[in-house]
Length: 434
Image (tube, rainbow, N blue to C red):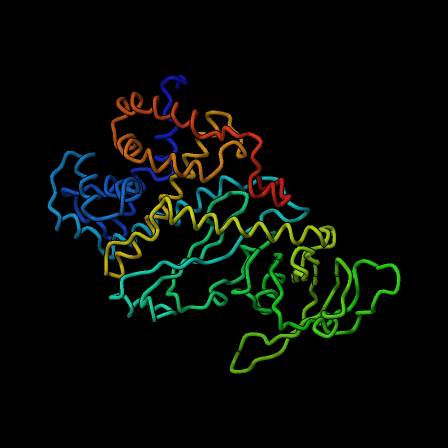
């Protein structure tokens, strides 16, 4: 096809979620049983791309549907389409979309030695209507009765989510993260909410790597130092970390240590386990304190790099901010549990559509990742969702006419005019993630 007749934006969206896939999933999940006034393909795109304007509401979504389809539908008929089956429909499509986008990053060169990917693990809280307290109880009931927690695994290089799970706010982070074959050759970064020695052992057993902060009350036994210190350095071998912390005066402590923990209960019995880990302490002169990390990273990665690596975890916080500020993660106009789930999945599907379009614009305009920062792109994407909705639902001939000015707009506005501005990974010294 000639370049002038190409439609990279429409193609990116239709390849991510083809109409045939949407109709098949709608039948399999029971979203539709026979073709009626509401088309599942058009309803899907209205829900996913309906993030422009003010607060998300059923009235706004219904008006968008009527505008792009020309069909008149009553408010009650439109609302009745948001059933538990429709929620399952969106959930299955989210799984498909995550798999497709993550497949795009496969085959890339290793990030650090044998580490092929770096994943950030964290969760964010979304407040709900108090009427949902029975389904989604919150923790701080003095001001919020109901809330959900969105657990996310972010691929740092892919800049998009890889795994997602929704629980109530009262569910602790730790047990949600389960290690399996999917962690092999990957480095997982997480905060103290996921701190469990049994999790560390499981990640190492499956060939993965972990890096997190060390708890203040942790007391691993130091076995040997990985670097020698000149002068009358204090001997730390064979001592617990808590016993020597207050007496340390060196800028870096990098040591092999042993931890003891209780394994999971099997057949009513619970045995104890031990594990060799790497303990790294980095002195922060500005705050006059040590930052302590526990990891199983190989010695090829220097102790000073450990702190820089852990700072990449901040990228998942930027993802949550993007979801809430641009894709209306916190705008849920319902008191029904299954509708709440549907809108949470819709925000995540919007994020996937945004990422797919960004990849298409980068390929079409030969733009590097550094020139098209994610937050800048998110604002452009949201401002253009009405045009994108019409583009993806228009006939092909009309779409070609509509796409050209929209594509030119993205190519002109997506690049950051300040070429010397350093992105977060570059400021942290992580050139491979920029």
